Image (tube, rainbow, N blue to C red; front, side, top):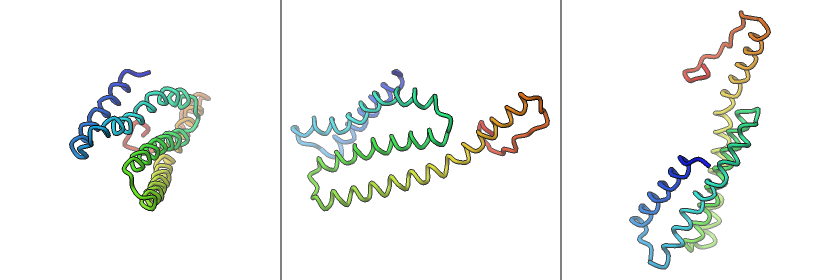
Length: 152
């Protein structure tokens, strides 16, 4: 478990708790429930991140990894948001509307994320092909990749 991860998430929980206290002014009896809603996703992230990191390191597809990370993040956000909205005692109609909007937002995020990671995955595949060609003795091969990041 990364110390940086734990410290970062603890700081995030502390900041979110202070913001929630200022904005929501919860009753004394509701503070623990509110803290639980805020802290539970961070605790889940502390447990899941090392497992995901181990899994990610063995994957062959950058796009697949990005999609998996996005799905896990969306699932965590969906569960957290659902718990928070359910705790707010909203009507069942409002809660169902919230779930529809959450589902729509999650779908948009996945589609956009998929579109944004495909070019990176394609360029990394090309780098692998060029590296294989160079290892085979072909020093004339070029990637043809034009990017402003580390891959280019």
